[in-house]
Length: 517
Image (cartoon, rainbow, N blue to C red):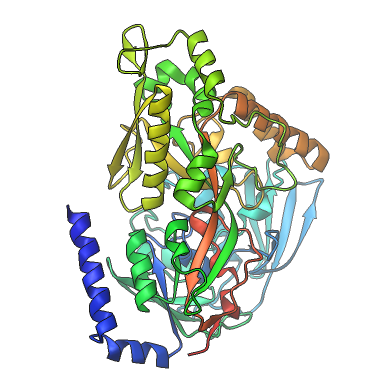
């Protein structure tokens, strides 16, 4: 009910806006050089604790960054060398870089950040296993640092894109609770200005940025978590740029008053069980059967307006490492019925499968503000019901991995395939929330992380994908397009980059954007 009132309130406000009640605000906005961007809500802007949103990437800088093709290149580093015999990288840092508070940036900050990621036992972050191969970080001088590894890690340069933290502000602090997380100081393209909880976060361009200073003066990250509300506010002109789901984007296509950008993303949707829950502890064998009951193309057509492709692998979008020769679990209701019979399941009087007096019934949780995921879950639920499986859809405000049975998950591996597989699927890894446990998959992922020979690495990932398909961690459904709708006044966006989860990464070239008001 509260959701209905919220939507009505937004609609009323939008109508009033169109009637002229906000003319003054609109005029002032269009007269300045400020971009209003639709944002999800935040709890932290610390790049170590938040790897799924735009703000950390434009406020902070890493030793490395990604170029347009998704390859790591020097950023805070001016250059680097690799000593294969000693498994060590030596980075020469750019001179004369300043933190947003005016303090000097140095190698001390790099060491501090990497020590936090590798030694701080109080740190609770999903990415820590990406850094566990670092054995030593040694400062040569203020502008030179060496990072030594325990064993080869082919993806380590990707992980050094993580935002570097200021030692002078955080040394001796509890990184999990410090107010820095809501008042960040970085070295990046934009500086934090203010945060009005539940309303907006404002940043301004860093005039002392060590590379190309951005053209847009300010960005207002307006917090609009509801997908339908975003579409209304784009239409009314309250938002200059928003990531919209496929159904809402459709309303703006072929409308000269708006620009629509369709990014390729590595963002997929899947049903992710909690393998620690009693149902999946007892029935994990169903994971290699249930996929046959889903008509994934029909789900894409019904919920994404065709803006997506059928998913079968977590690294499917990687042109180098994808293995297409694995089981895709294509829709096959006859095969599904055969396999269910072989497992001892029979349909009961209500059409739902039963075994030893137990109905085949489980639940999937979906967050209330993600309309597209709710739609996907509901269509999948109906398809399952038609096949004899009861999947109940729980719409929740927050996720609790201790109690949920499954989640309509979204993940992505847009860059090196290690970054989107290792921490999610290796047993007890820092991002393995589903408690997936597959020793063979672990073996191949470890091989792939450590293998320098690209052909051997391809083989390791090919083997991982086959093992993962034979014993799935998820029921894969679809890869999504990244649909952004903008005012035509906004120029400079580039769709060259493959975006990540929630189409994050759109601001990868934000310094080149400008507004023609």
